[in-house]
Length: 314
Image 1: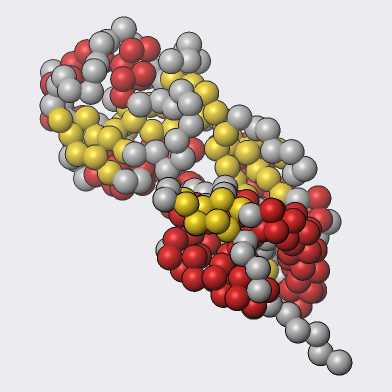
Image 2 (image 1 turned 180 degrees about the vertical axis):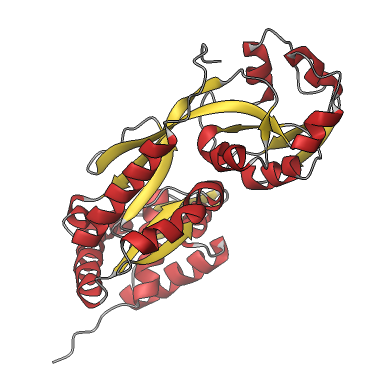
């Protein structure tokens, strides 16, 4: 006999709302509105015949019944995600899914995919450009490349790349900047800014980079350059001669080698974080995932042969 089950979408919405203790953050996680989360929760409450959340003037609070239901539901959904992922993998073993920030995908990973096809033509790569924290099993992701401190409990972690920040511009811009002889001179030129896709403590910006050169910069002095939502956009602007940008070595290495960008000065600042390669122990057992990770590590090590001057971190 068939068993009556509540609607899965409503369960998913309720579990996220219970975990985040609110509808707004649950909606952000599931990429729907807070109103949609509320609608699903009401649907589940009607199906169960109980109140799961107490609606308050400012937000919602789990009822005692809601707390008990959420505590029981979490492990069930995790188990469902695990068995579903195992089934999906069995039917689609050639697909390897990787996630990284859009700038790293655009500036580092994509230019190397031809070499991946030559080495492992059997791998069908699925690339997700995302800056959000990822639950590898729940989101169907095999490999994640993340910028951070390196603490990722329960996952297999390898250091992939360090960050060294340099000031860069187009060759034409540099040739026309005759008075650009020392870092303090940068304040007379347009400084391009990007808004980091992942906000981490101590990230290197123009203020920190110039401070490491002994130059005071408040963000308001000098010429005001454009601001961009992603680093790759900022670097495209620099390559088209619109000003000077600062960016980390993984994102500019290929452009420096090709001559699309040039370093304004030899000075480079080591960033406080590194790129790490993450995967679950289960994903690591898949031969193609293991091969893809070994290929990524080899590509990153080849890049590290570029010598970045060692200076004190800002």
